[in-house]
Length: 237
Length: 237
Image (cartoon, rainbow over all chains, first blue to last red; front, side, top):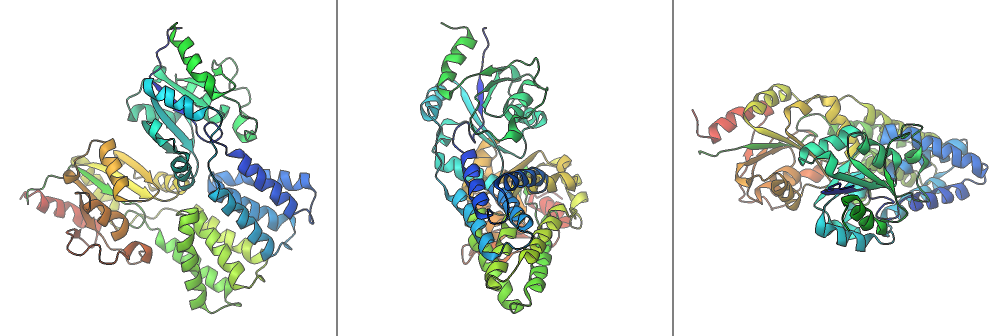
């Protein structure tokens, strides 16, 4: 109790707005498209495997995912997937890229309220072009003092932000839906973290083995509960 | 004369290291691959057109370019390009992504010299994942006080950097090979700029119409001439 938080970091995808559902929809469409060639389970597992291994080659984001879908189509059809199918995969990508940003419940009001009392920092991972576009479409930029785009959310990367803006880790609280990217790296360097699980979080982001054992972080169900949690932490009231 | 420069901004691709040649090589390989279907000139012009229009959909970078190559292959083969050809296009992309960073002549020595006297800022546009990887492989990060990744190099984007780091535009000098991205936006908001033309600069970056008429910027042939230019500008010696 009596913790003084000055800066609140927010993850964006699936913390402030819907993201993973776009990928799930495209994955479902790919399964339907390739159903003449393979069983759904095999298509899904091959795509998942390709996507994960391609992160190291292509990075995160829709374009990387699209190349993984194309590779999956070529491989699973044993080279018989034709131009028509590949063109359809590209149309899935274009639909994802042009989709509206759907804010999660309570986000707008909570940010508006917290921005009065705290410095807010958005820290989003992934493709710069895609993330900038979502920030713009979200209409949320006005609540944030800092907006940071990063390639990976490692402890070192957070540390760099603390140095850059002369932030005390003990006064920094990170909010997000990924144990791997939002919670673990921040508490490992002395910051605090609030985990808001999201039903469709990508397994890549939750699979952190035993690294979190014994580490302390907070968990809430909905972003709307954040002001009350902060109030409790500060020991006020 | 008597200009006091405090911070020097550097573009990265084709200013510090080779970049466009990777694209030209891949383009040449695509032309060879599609030669059974179309004339080289038509392949090239279709790819160029697709690439430009796709910037607005996908952004900059190798993954965006790869999707443009795939679309070109599908379109120009009238749907007869098969899995084998698409797989080859993907292999061009993987080669580009894994290629070594080749510094341009004089870069290392010039940065080492200037970093003693000035604050250096790298400002690079494009895909975050790809640019971060190049920065790391270049070994140049140690010379830069700031490294900034941006989606587009607009006057507004430079202005944001000036505000963020409390820089006086009059004390800022930008160095780059793109009239559109490095020169024009900086001088339009009161900064100074040094243009180093590069033989293979993408036409998208040089085609600025008459916007530069009557605007003042400096031009040198090689980055090694930069210290002398700065010396002259400062009125010393």
